[in-house]
Image 1 (cartoon, rainbow, N blue to C red):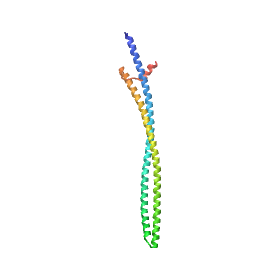
Image 2 (image 1 turned 30 degrees about the horizontal axis):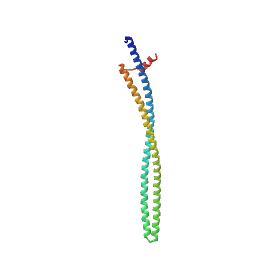
Image 3 (image 1 turned 60 degrees about the horizontal axis):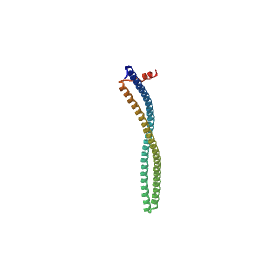
Image 4 (image 1 turned 45 degrees about the vertical axis):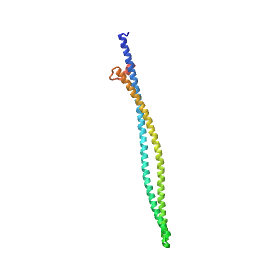
Length: 194
């Protein structure tokens, strides 16, 4: 059988024990928030780096597109000069007049030179395209690595957030158990020190 004062002491003991636990939970929330916020800071940095890589990759893709258009234009020009050269060669073989033969021979040489110049330009654009494509692949690999880092940090952040939520839920159970509306954690710390 409990005497009245023993029940009060026991209730006081339980309340103090629960308030101590709530205070410890509060401190764990503060620590978990700091850890979560630090993960968010790292996340922002990594996301910004990932965005920059993505932007650079997009710019390179746009450059590749421009170079493809230039290359295709040079190839079209080369084909035009090839047709003109072939026509001059055909005329050269058909004519018997020496003056016309010299004229058609010079034309086919000029068209051939222009065709080769256009082919060389197209080839230079193509080499530049290949170089940029290698860089784009490298950027995409770096982007993927940053994305993996984002996912990893987000996972860590979510763990800290769950720890915070569990601690808040445990504090709410204590508050409901003792019908407490508001806990002043700093006062609970002072009571512990005394």
